[in-house]
Length: 215
Image 1 (cartoon, rainbow, N blue to C red):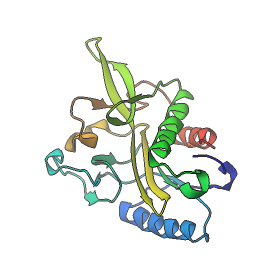
Image 2 (cartoon, rainbow, N blue to C red):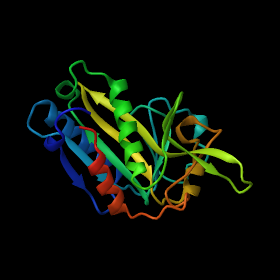
Image 3 (cartoon, rainbow, N blue to C red):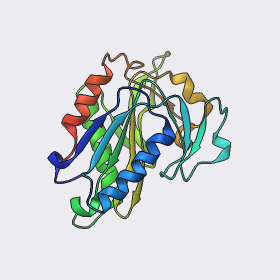
Image 4 (tube, rainbow, N blue to C red):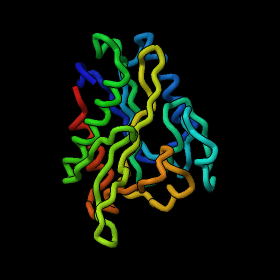
């Protein structure tokens, strides 16, 4: 994400948004951004409990479909969305923002955005080579150090306009992730602000994301 911070229009939805409704809005907005009739958009929201299957999802990673499952055009594998998790849908024109549009750079920008936001709350988010998302090191019940994912990334790009985006676990029910192998990674768990003992409200997280957006 490069120039144009003040040109992005932010929308924050207080009530949970149905997944199919959100995708329809994104599809329409992407078309409008491409033809110049809409400003770039970042939409912060929550979904009811559900699973989504990205373009690389393996059926074997859907362990227990206890919530609705939606096939989606974003990259990645299975992911969970639900109450207590903040989703950020990012609709930007990469041709306008990058001299040579680069999706890998865009994903790294998203990662850095999350890392900078987590730092506001004293959480050290880290990248891991070969693993999508943002990770934290935590201490388990035995005192051993383990790694767990606190934020996920899944993007789609159409005519160099981005959509889908990120999700950060504030205080979701982590048991709900057990119905899938999150992002196809079985050797590590998931965590949240609450799980790490960090007290924060959804509004505080929304404000931090707005503050730390890369310009």
